[in-house]
Amino acid sequence: MIRRPGPAVLGLMLAASVAVAEPAPEVAAGCRALAGVLGSVSMADCLEAGLEPAGGRTVQGRPILMREYPPLAPREPQGRVLLLGGIHGDEYSSFSVIFRWMRTLDVHHSGLFHWRVVPGLNLDGLNAGPAVRTNANGIDLNRNFPTPNWHEHQQEYWVERTGRDPRRYPGEAPLSEPESQWLFSQIEAFRPDAIVTVHAPLGVVDFDGPKTPPRRLGYLDLHRLGAYPGSLGNFAGLNRGIPVLTLELPHAGIMPSHAESAAVWRDLVAWLSRHVRNPPDERPSGEEPPQRIAAGEGYSTRDSCTICQPDDGSLRQNCCLRDTAWKLLLE
Ligand SMILES: [Zn+2]
Image 1 (cartoon, rainbow, N blue to C red):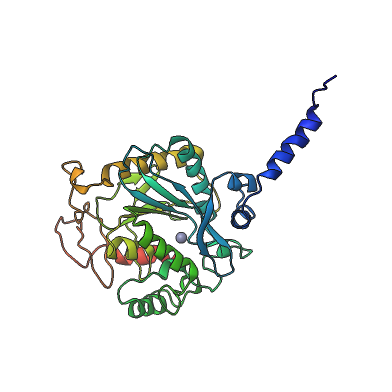
Image 2 (cartoon, helix red, strand yellow; image 1 turned 60 degrees about the vertical axis):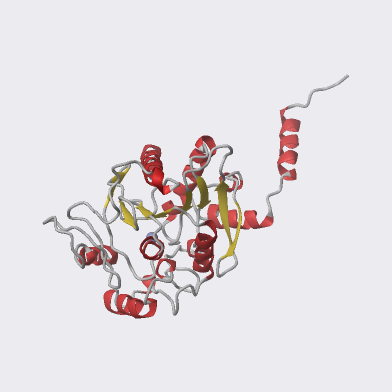
């Protein structure tokens, strides 16, 4: 007589089949670094997210993980997009929301873009117990990218503007850190047409680089924060000409609602589909030239002041929100 296995036996069989599919040690280590801290991401969520070792490690040896959503033949993607969470270790929501958007891509990836998705760069900061903004060497990774005249401007920024704020210490040299080195080489290799980087808690969307910025993405309104020496937006957006959308979620420790994160994603993809388009001569007609910015908005840097348009409607250089931006950042 053949007996069917009861529920308990089935449970054991299932457990055995799961055990066979052991995650790669690097993936397990990276997922422990993420799921061990993030309340919204379980170990199972992370292991099932299709992440792979990205070829880089943090100062303390934690593997950086990445998920690729490749082109889907025969469709030619409109461009390559790098989506990045967790440059600052204490901005928990900036890691967790990436998992939500990966689940959206799992269902809806249509080949419109070739995505590379990195849920977290600063895994050491996240795991510092309590989490910290900087990496394990005490360096703000978002001030460690090689922007022009880095030494001169960092000195002025860090010493004079921040009063030697340890949370914003840029390091002794650009690209001194393995995490920023990895991201730099990833940008060189992947050549993204747009970079989306997630932070918290300012509750705005910021934009650097060419193209017309979005006026809002979901519940995040455009607010140009200015470009800081060594920041990713300054390096990739202003110096490399890659549009950088910086999504500042309103809370570091509270996730957006599902409706809020879905609305941001919907608007983000809509903006990308209009503005990231290869070849470039297929851009929709009527797109504004990149330097035209809405009245009252604009940005400037101390080294390469960008054209902006103040309230009086004139186009001029060396103006705008710099002081506001510094103040906002330093609050
Ligand atoms: Zn941040």
